[in-house]
Length: 264
Image (cartoon, rainbow, N blue to C red):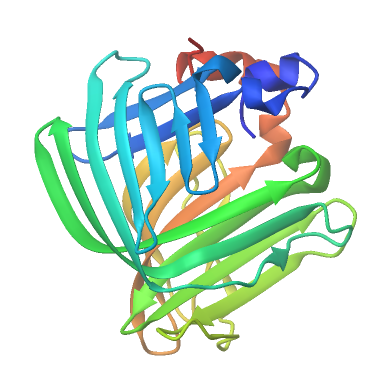
């Protein structure tokens, strides 16, 4: 959905514009998102193969095997990630009034084991798996959004706030439990976060103050962070993203994307 090549070719033939994105943060920071054509794509009900990487659902979990090369620095990123859901959610949420954009948090609670060969490291902990589907460009329906997901005990807390072009603002506040049941927790107010290095405005939901724990991704139109916020006396650390689609729609910004997203 962020492919500049897909946009430049009139958003036709989506199978000809596919990629596996691997983002690794910390001391061994790597980013890989190489777009590949339809002759490098294989699909079946339980498997997706894109170039040298694959995603396979084996009935118990999702196995991701990747062998990618980073950009803009061409360092290898190879390894395996195993995600096993603790809870599965079958409900998809409409993100805008016309029903052209759907979001499904498939596994809001999951256990994850990551084992990298290049660079050599491993990690295990809790994780999350979702999917988006749309019938038009994101920038046609939204001007910006913020999203966060954190875990408190056996519950995943998700906040999704978006400014929509054809409808009033979206405000989703969701709590998923280990049985896959979803309920709206009390929604804290929107509070401002510090702007990104690219001066991208950011907000989150918090009953008190909120802070940026770690800046992970910082681009002209997108920022990813770890945020600590207050849910009515409970401190929670969440993965957080801010997306500005007015900026993304700018032709100058699209012209910058091939530096991070080459096409082979």
